[in-house]
Every structure is written in structure tokens, then in C-alpha cells.
Image 1: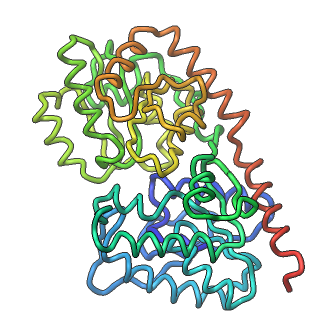
Image 2 (image 1 turned 30 degrees about the vertical axis):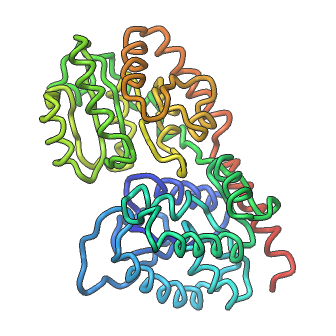
Image 3 (image 1 turned 60 degrees about the vertical axis):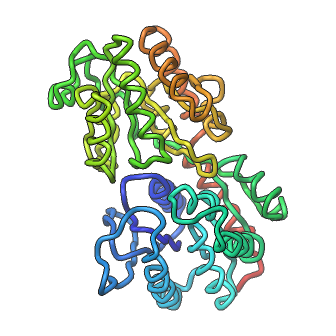
Length: 393
């Protein structure tokens, strides 16, 4: 696997890489992950890192001009490890992984599987790294088209929306695209691991959250396109309505800037920021919430955090997007995308109905167990590997 990121970190696509690898290993597949020099090692995973850059040792999440250098180092490291590891399949995550992997796959005469986690150009626009009306945008779009259409022997997508995007916008033959939604580890994310009575979770005591408050939890990256400003505004609206609702916002980066925003809205006593939460501790932190929320604004990426919420038997308020509906079906409590007033109303409505919260949470956990299983997905990936390597020496 080629992972053009600081694997492992406790968010987003890293979880997919981690769980895919573990599930494949359980089926007897030997996996080596080539990635950037930063990131956390994970017991049981073969992680091979690049050398550090000499001039930039601390870099931000997401798009960055420094990623060009990181990816150059990654290409060299991937070529070195390919000679040592002699892979039967190269599995490239994200577009940079597919680009590097595509060159290596042709040199070694092995197939390339591209794990597509969202549009490259759309993500760069979301991170304000690329102007959709600027001179560079058409060139970036052409590069994305070339990567997706010409290099992979097969593409895995995390949603039906992504599958349609590849087919309709980028002209990828449908037979080459395989929808493989993110899945949930329902053993790790299990409410039984934190069986605290309502209001008595130790985190509520630690952060001074009133025992009678309804806690709305978010766990993920703290960025504007994830909708964090909308959560702060919703907290302000709920305060004006007199609702006893507290927001527990878990994750990183940009914690201080969002704390300042909460102060400016007058809700710094209604919004608690925990900072980074290690993946191993995520179930414990999520268990402190009565309601989970997913205000992500990007429509080009998956939303794997929903599955962790579902596995923890939490009712979920989310913006009404195609990806969110793929995961939640009719069990989500939806607001029109970007409508903060509607998001606020949905949270208030669910907060006032403990019976509905309980029924929805239990149904969502059952849905996660029945329809989003990593062992079943790993079987599909392994079967795809077998199909692609038939006739390859």
C-alpha cells in the first residue's frame, strides 16, 4: 500500500487504511504500508516511512505546497520498498498514491488498485488550496482525470456517489469501479465498553459539563469544510432558545481558533474542545455524548465517522447529503446541507425526545453490524486481488 499521508493519525481516511489492512491481514494477506515519515506506528502493521524533509518537519493536515516534496520522497521510498517487498498488487490510496503506484505497477508488471477517497480537485478547493476559477484549476483537473482514467486496473470507492462521479464526470469504465463503503469495527466501537449512566460519564465531570445537559458530540478534523463553524453557531442559537445543550467537539487541528470563535459567539461555556483524541480512546470519548452530529459540507468525500457513531448506538443529526444517506438510510435526522437553522432545530427536536434517541441509536448500531462489516469487505478486496493477479507471474 502507498499512503501519501502521515499514517497513522486519528482521523478520516487513516481509519479506512488501518481497518482495511487489519482485515486483509486476518485473511492472510501480507501488507506493507509506505507512508510519510511522520505518524504513529501501529502494533502489528508493517509501516515503512520516508526520510524526513530537512526544511519542514511540522506540516498541516490537508493540502500543502510541501506535499510535493513529501510525495517526491514517497516515490523514492516506494520504489525502494517495491524492490524489497516484491508486491503482487500495488494498492494506492488517494490520487498521489495512485500516481506513484501506477508508475511502479508498470515497472514491475503488477496491477494497481486505486483506493479513491474523494475528488482531488474538489478536496483542494475545500482546503482553499486551489481556486476553482483560477488558471491552475484546469491543469489539476486534467491531472486528476489522467490518474483516474488511465492508471488503475481497478478503483475502490467509499460511496455510490463517488462511483457515479468516476463514471459520469471522469469517464472511467463502470467495470473498473467497485463500491466498497467504509465500515465499522463494532467490537472496538461498542457502547458496552463505556457503560456509564446518563450524565455520569467521567468526561462530563472532567470538563465541567452539567449533569442534566444533553451532550452533542462531534469527533473528527476541525476545519471549516467539516462544518465546525456551524456547530458553534448552532450552540449560540440553542442558548438563545434556553435549551440545556452542550457541544463536545473532539479533534484537531485549529483548536485555539475555534475556541476564540466560540468565545466571540458567547458560547465558550457551552462548547468544549478536547483536542486530539487517540483512535484507541475514541469509543470512551464518544460515549459521553447523547447525540452525534455530522455537519460536513464537502460532498466529494466519504464520511466514515458516521459508522463509528452508528456502532456506538448514537442517534445522528447530519446534513442531508447523498453520502450520509448511504450510511444512515432513513435512520438519520437530517437538515438541508448548510442550513444552520435547520441543523439547530433538528438537534433541539432530538434532544427533547429521549425515547426516539434510544430507538434510533439501537437501530443504527444494528445497521452498522449488518451492512458495514470489515471482514466482508476484506473478502471482496482479496477476491479482487486474486482476479487481477490471474496470469501475472
